[in-house]
Length: 323
Picture 1: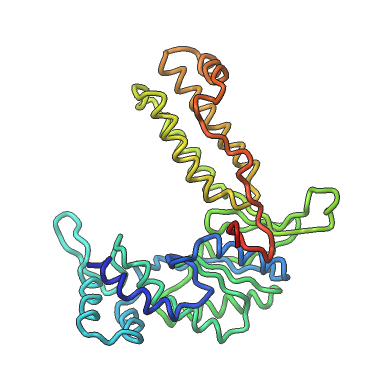
Picture 2: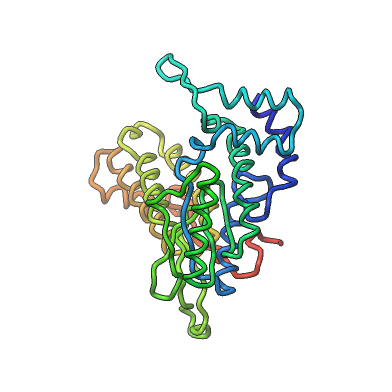
């Protein structure tokens, strides 16, 4: 029922959603939002307000959400269905708990309803002159030209969210100045930092570079470790390699649009090391046995290579090939 409702109402609200919103929308991806950061930093907006909304999906008030839905939908049956989804509650330990706030947990319609409510933030931001807003669901940044504008943007964000019954997460809220040798910020899995070109011909050029964040790298290492764990020693090596390749291709498919060469090399070396260790443990041999088996294979037992897959972002150029 949630999927059916989403199919019906999504085009209605998509007609109103603003370009600053990127999360959970058709034909819009995280890399579209990331490209805005590259473009705006190149244009001089290098003071960044970084934050996300605290417990957003659990904190959205039902009354406010229904008011936002009713701005575009008047069909009573459909409105009743949406209200029923919000009031359905969650069953834990055989008991149903109902709340007066929050979208359906794990529901396919929840991201759309969150965007419907947060559209009020996007709409109000249009009347502000405090930087460029980039919002991916409840994760957002504001690109500003100077510290004063960034401070005003943060104050405006807090004020708008307070009226909506929401608040920024204090632990993730800060103002970052993107400058050479300075700190960076994490957004949508990437770490972003203002750097100078290493090419001698372009040493005068600085740009916003990005690569997988520490958290993204830790997740990748943990996943590779899970796929080569001792509990899987009885599995065929072909299956282990297939599982590793499936993960590595998916992980690299997202992070290839960045300056990620060093991080890709680290993850491939980690995968090689874990596979060699898995081979040695499987045959109850020293670790060098696994490395010998890996080296003896002309294709590293079929393990993928990520060399040559990187696509470096460029300001004012579409990130998608062919556009």
